[in-house]
Image (cartoon, rainbow, N blue to C red):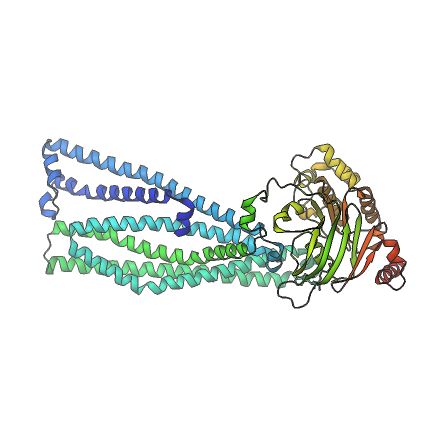
Length: 598
Ligand SMILES: Nc1ncnc2c1ncn2[C@@H]1O[C@H](COP(=O)(O)OP(=O)(O)OP(=O)(O)O)[C@@H](O)[C@H]1O
């Protein structure tokens, strides 16, 4: 409720006020039955225990026929007015609910996407999908029930007031009975929360499982793993089914108790009223009327409480994720709000001299061993620098540090001699074009994929970028050219084509620094030649950093940094290092030549 108030502000109070009006009108609509019945002659106004002298006075001014018409007209007016207000109220409730959910969605998505890279290294991506879809849908449902319950509570309060006016003693008795039942049924509310916890757990496993299965569908099919996955899926579905049935059993169980106790209490009331208290039958009729309206409210409140309790775990999951992301914000709030460090309007930097790593050490969270140790390296501007080393040597980690995705544990990264600080981080990153080993493309046309980095890119600029990345020829051959849909993650293209397309996309941004994590297996010799040509075209204009797996791609590199077990073991020009017979680089070269030769 606190969060809801925070998001919606005073509308929430207007909403509550509206609910009070509606319930008052509903109450009046029902109690209009009294003068109506007295007019029809079922009973005398005075005999009900109700004392509305002014109503009698007003009515007595009219003839008997007009009285009936007046009462019926007022009744229709009140009930229709109430129905009209109810509609407005429903729309307002939906607005409040949707505004709340939209805010939660945007806050959560924004918090996730603005978190630092190290946060993503520890998390499963499918958890985010799960929270943003399933859990937020449950929160939305919970909010709607919460608003309904707020209305229910107000209606009940007003009806209790009216009932007290009719008969304080009997109403007090109904309330005591309701309270006793509520205390007895409290454990059901707790149990509903446990079931809700399980719902979150199961739906998370379900979501993670199916995401993983479809990501690895090729492995599943090629290794004939369908059966074991089907078994897992069936187990999961049964668990979810049991969980939903458990809640239904619980909820219908408490409803049953409520209904049965209603019958018992009503019977006891009638007996007490007639035999012990000797209440006149007309009043008894009203008491039954009140009870029959009040008791279902108690039942609804109990049911709503159970629903809300079962939804609260979803809300907790969303809040927990927000809290975690708040701790892992890439740019602190003060800095983001202080200047131009939002996501819009960031001015890219231009690398003029060099990127320098000064005694950099880095260790992944939860890991005891250092992935980078005392790294000293310099990358000159507008040149081509290759980072080489065995698998696990720390090449990708070094690149992540240079791009500011992770921060050194000790040591510094200097851009043109100035430390890479939080204030300059986004500006620095916007000047980098990055092509990963597993390049990412969206399931849309080539044009849309390219426009992702520059929505205003002209046709000519796009073709120029494609030309630069040696992709123009294959794009021209595609049936719909730039408008060809390339499939999920670009599945309809070869690995090499995907990488060149991502290179074109990176180039469209006009980056000052191009980082290329060369694919280990995706490139054949022809493609490698294309990439090599593309890089040659860029040399002298852009600072190129290549993580090279195939050393032949980097034969024209100005500088080579050789890493081994997180240390820089050699640094220098390609020619210089390749002619050093005892150095690791020449051994790596010989090894690759051997592999190629075999
Ligand atoms: N997310 C992570 N959590 C913990 N340790 C990690 C993580 N990522 C990498 N490492 C470790 O850090 C070291 C360096 O890894 P890195 O990915 O930088 O190597 P690399 O040279 O790029 O390897 P490759 O050529 O196989 O991509 C390795 O020992 C690796 O096990």
